[in-house]
Length: 587
Ligand code: ARG
Image 1 (cartoon, protein in one colour):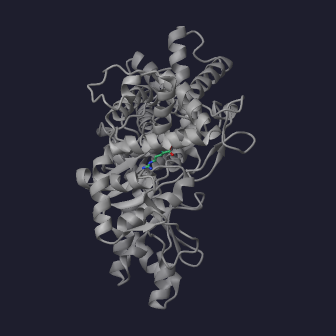
Image 2: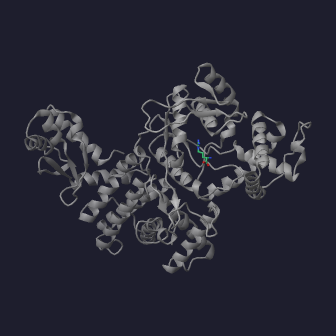
Image 3: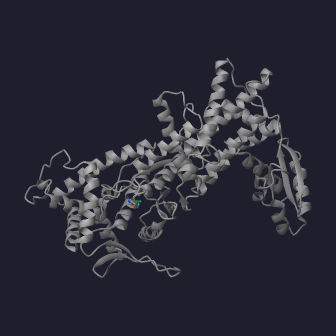
């Protein structure tokens, strides 16, 4: 689907070219002043500089050419040489009719033939997922849906944190507790039990205890370091224990992400690239990129143009353990080998920007990234009312599971307050509340630009009025209910016709979807789609309040308006779908 702005840009571009001017000057955008026109083209102003001529005179020549085209119902010159444009209703009708005839809503195809690996989620094995991972999950999932909609081949990878010190801390704590001595017996080489000696709940208790012990006692920390290095060096009992940690964590994590409707193509982690690390280090040493520094092996990544100091990337510490940056570097090798992507996008907390800068520089210096562009799409923090990262009332880190329960409970209260879903069976109401609660949470997160911090505000997020997830879900549910009633009366939606200002605005917005998809992709910014969905719902609401639909006496008009309802619903559903937001059947 090409957007109207793209179509008009091509037409205006041809007009500029016919005047011997650069075609790019024909760029047409949605008008800044919707009260004056639907679209505008400012190319005559730049053309005037190139041709050293009067901009209004150039605009007049371009306008004369544009007036030949039946797609335009108005071509006007304003101010110093802006060209204001309106599209003829018949042209809108034709494009809308095309959409009505097609079941699927075409995307933009910006990603045709291209592959992107999206690295998001990033939870850590054995540690409960917290709201810090929530933004990565929600934004990353929306980006994977968006890139797919735009024709990219997308491979999402959860990249679990499973190879760091926390693994050694767990192992040594379990050793101290004597829970599973067989894994610590250096003379025993296996096979090890299939059943994990610890459950996810056990890990949730053991990990904080282990980390506290290491904080309190330097000897315990040393032990944990040693266990980490031994695990990484391949000690069989430790590897077997590690596999249990990974497996039980995966079950728990899959359940949690699943309840948010979030899925990953790959369940890899830092540890999965372990076999690549040795050869990578050898290669880096040979090429002289990896050098000794204070007992550690590092890659210097500073550049003369740096304004701030960029420290070297540490590959191997003096105790032999590898670090976060080492596994990230090896992961690039793995991804290039298995996916040969055009882009690797890391949806990770903005505070890790420095880390990614180091990793990307090292990867490029060593030519590890193939044809892939490496990009960190960072995000800000979800804060509590005190402006600090969101915590539970007791001051602990809020777990994702508790957060979902809290959102669902609040959504149910709001539904009851609004008199919605009250006569439905309790089970259905609970399901609606779950969708609304999660929709509220996701929309609130996505509607801010990813780089801004925002304040968690349960009451505001779950409101049915204003720019919220529940408002949009309700708007869609209302259209569904109109269409259901129509169906009950044996009515079929027909092809819409643009006859009124409200219908025109709605049609123009529907046709602008490709622009929104493209802008959202270019900026890695789902908030562009939140704006699109909100404006669409508002345009529908104005159309709905100004027109009779089911009560319209003229059968042809009624069918046309039902057709516009159906098309709006399809577009709203599609965009909410890209945001990862589900629409309840009814409310
Ligand atoms: N596990 C990391 C964390 O919790 C996030 C991983 C992000 N992805 C990456 N390739 N480094 O902070």
